[in-house]
Image (cartoon, rainbow, N blue to C red; front, side, top):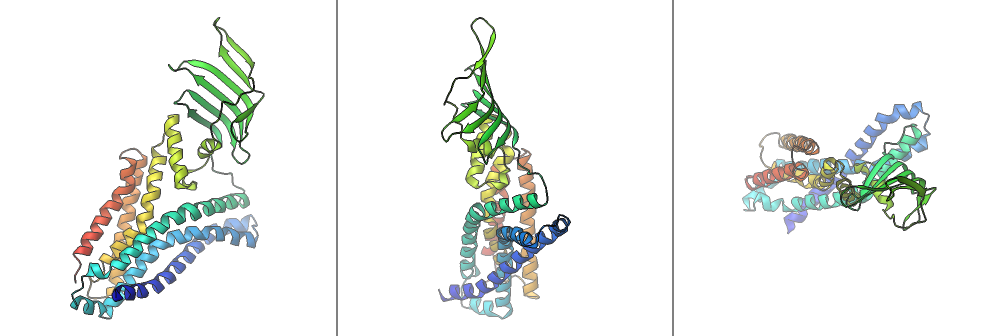
Length: 355
């Protein structure tokens, strides 16, 4: 449709300028927030720029919903101010039909946002954090010590003093094996275990077992290939959920559930990884629904109204996610309830918009 192409051509230049401007602003905020520390630790200027470059994808991720909101509100407000929307309404075209191309752009932006965050933002943000910790002489936040993993329905328990996931080495390994009734069967202790590609090769391993005479015997562990827990199982327990792709977060939740460890917070983060990608669609829908509702100061009022409703969405999302992580509501509800509420509000406002 000619009007769809016209509206898209009006929208896209403003959107690209807005996303570049907001992304640049986000990068500057992060740079100036850490600039004093960079200078105190005498971080070279090229490395500061390198760290900022790795933060740029995250800045784009933050800027995308804001730019969509700004560009859609500006485009529709400008069309209304120039009386072009009045001409379109006079021709009998509903506002919802006229703005359909912007709704589709918001939906496509949400799909793009999920894959962009999962494939680009998370790896680059992790690299940026590692570089920052290195040059600012900060210890890594990963929990690489005191890892406990349960396997085989809880009948095999791995306890690791320290896990080197870059070399795939378990240091200070203890393996407790339980019987079907939960009774103790054996304990294996090894100074270290190295992943061979298929199983864990243990060094200086000994085993403690109850003998038939009722005594606990200790003996050297024969060479064995039966312990085959994948290194990623230990790695997922050694990093933060927000630094893992969506698939890895889902596996982390499964690991925690099998191990009998608290998993509600990780599960909420997993659902939030999908629901947060819909923010672009939600803010676009809310911004469009504000179009044509004001007769004076159209552009300013459209921007302020869209921003106010978007802030309400972010506040509700923050509250429901906090309640989900604390266990007051199901994790899926904490992630998706604000999306469902504001999508319904957006479509109702769009349906009731003046034409």
